[in-house]
Amino acid sequence: MPPSAVHVPHPPYPTNVPARTTSEGNHHSEWICGCGRSLEWRKGFGILTGVPKVSRVTAVLEIAGLQKTYRSRKGTRKALDGFDMVVEAGQVHGFLGPNGSGKTTTLRTLLGLIKPNGGRMAILGKEVPRHLPETAGLVGAIVESPQFFGNFSAQDTLSLLADAGNVKRQRVTEVLELVGLRDRGKDRVKTYSLGMKQRLAVASALLKQPKLLILDEPANGLDPGGIREMRSLMRNLAESGMTVVLSSHILGEIQLICDEVTIISAGRRVAYGSVSSVLAGHGSGKTKVRLEPGVDMRAAVEMLRANGAQVTVEVDHFTVGNAGNPAQITRILAERQIYVSELTPVSADLESVFLELTGTAPVEGQNRQVDQTASVGGWGQ
Ligand SMILES: Nc1ncnc2c1ncn2[C@@H]1O[C@H](COP(=O)(O)OP(=O)(O)OP(=O)(O)O)[C@@H](O)[C@H]1O
Image (cartoon, rainbow, N blue to C red; front, side, top):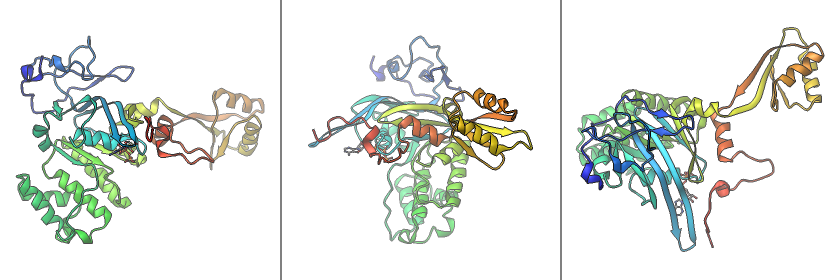
């Protein structure tokens, strides 16, 4: 059945129906028209058959099986290899991946700047690129560093964009305030620092009060204070109902700010879900050990090292890096009448999980090449 035959305009967006996730992490959602009928033609779009239907659309962004191969005289390069992504309404969603993993390709494809070779995408319940004209006004995006006229001020730049997009001039003042450029809004852009230009870019993406904001490295060039301000801006926007997709290499920042993350490697999704669930699946392999007060920590450490443990000593505790079975630690120490008062697995942080999942952890004595984890299909062949 062709889409037009069943498509009834959807309720504006989005609903508060929670997404459901299986133990395997599969996302289950059903696409329902305003009339309440299921859009059967979307069945192949990441929807599992035989799954009970939720009553409304909850995903602001849904990508399924996206494929993109760049072709040139030199050969082909597979940038996206069946990539999937789901972003629920009102989230700050981190989009992470090493250099060359396919993030920009995904975002550019989503915005209609690149044609995919396969897969399906929908923004705010509408398939793109077919419905891009309807969704374009609802999406604000900075995918590559935007170029501004150096002789224009931020205010001139935004006013021009506002006029072109039928946005009220009042909104220019609001977005300048939001991104912290109020006092420099009348200065020429060529006098701006990198971070100030970045703020202007975010302001331009916010002009239309988009429902979905896509930002590629928004913290690029920002000072620590600016990064913190950007973080609270993102959170405030999400709290006001906007959905924010954030691509960044600053993983500590992502861990602080994002509700959920999608990790891409070699054009495929390798992990997704809430930050805590992604972390929960990956222990650090380290165990923190604290001894009873007054016990000789140095003797305990020596004993463990003699048994092959990799121990890092901190001020009032130590960490064993390779304790496959933490009971070994207590056994070795107890044999010498040394007793532990704390034995805690150290949880992984997003950076170490990222490095593990994407295979990009530095290896001593090796210079990893950017494409080392990519699936390269005959470049130069
Ligand atoms: N126009 C192009 N022609 C050929 N190959 C391309 C083109 N654009 C991107 N690629 C290749 O596609 C792959 C994915 O690139 P992409 O820019 O999507 O990565 P990325 O995850 O955004 O990287 P980064 O974090 O460095 O910005 C890379 O191997 C890149 O070299």
